[in-house]
Length: 62
Image 1: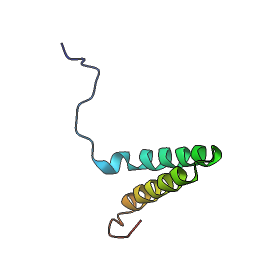
Image 2: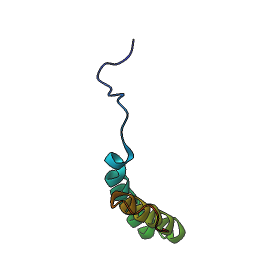
Image 3: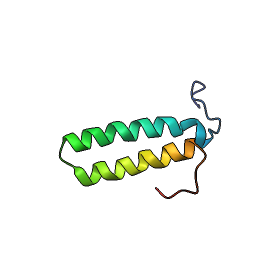
Image 4: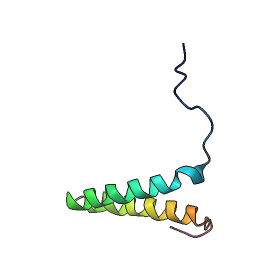
C-alpha cells in the first residue's frame, strides 16, 4: 500500500535549484577544508551552474 504522506507531484527544476546551489556551496566548503581541492572546484562549478539557472542565464558557460 503506497504511503499517502509522500508527495509525488512533479517538481520543476527551478523550485529546487536554490537548494542545489546552497548544498553544493556547503559541500565545496567542506571539501576544501578536507584538502580535496579538485572536488571543491567541481562543486563550485555545480553551484555556479545552479545559480545561473536560477537567474535564467542557461546559455552562459559555467
